[in-house]
Amino acid sequence: MQLGLSTAPGATLLQVSQSDVFSQIQNDALLSSSLWVNIALAGLSTLLFVYLARGVSTPRAKLIWAATLMIPLISLSSYTALVSGLTVGLIEMPAGHPLGGQEVLSQWGRYLTWALSTPMILLALGLLADVDRGSLFTVIVADIAMCVTGLAAALITSSYLLRWVFYLISCAFFAVVLYALLTEWADAATAAGAGEIFDTLRALTVVLWLGYPIVWALGVEGLALVQSVGVTSWAYSGLDVVAKYVFAYLLLRWVADNEGTVAAAGESTGGASPAAD
Ligand code: RET
Image 1 (cartoon, protein in one colour):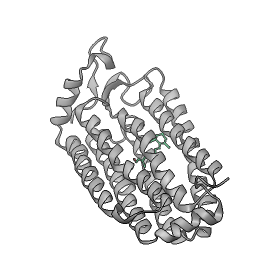
Image 2: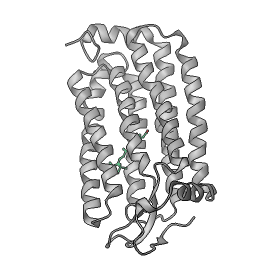
Image 3: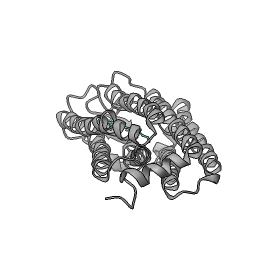
Image 4: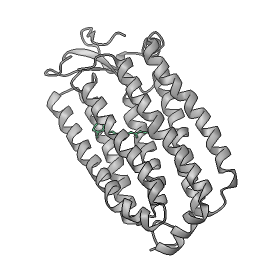
């Protein structure tokens, strides 16, 4: 994989055509396979989830199912945009960066579409745990802010320092999400009778989500300790497979088997259900 391409004088992100990036992706087997595998898995997961939901009838379970179904659908769009070159670009790294002055391939579309997919994951988890609306709102807004500031960290080309400032701001938003998952939401889930499945999903979420900022820091956009865009892309894709499809499958299977518990939680605790507050 070509990665620290030397910069042609005056070359900018906008001068690299989409088809150039597209052929660069197609010519890199490691990189393109990391994207195509996810397109295939997102498609299969969508079909499986529609099948799993055939018996779901209560409004609350339907809402959880709708949020969960969005996860592979957003992923399908996200990976198709990446593979086409639409949301991938060559970014010239600022002075001070290990690859300063060189252009690196940035899959910036990932950060953008995480701003759509991760709120669906948190919405499904929050509904499952029957958390109150204030908490759900705060966590989802912090999560979107985490993704958008992560996008800023990836796209800044003027200052190496500011890339890391935005990275730290994103980490601060991430801390809000982690804090809620580990404290308040866990208590709410136990009260709602979903303690066990919530513990499993929370462990999966906390451990895997921590992997994303680590991959960013090690990859070409951060410290460039790993200089292959294909390897970085596989790391993100691997995390995505478990954080999205395995997560969503476990959640939906539990909801389908425990619809009564899900419906009762919304009625009795006055949590995030529409009738509450
Ligand atoms: C970035 C870099 C800046 C610092 C932090 C990050 C965290 C990203 C996370 C992403 C999770 C993505 C998931 C996607 C599934 O569709 C943006 C990498 C904290 C936690 C689960």
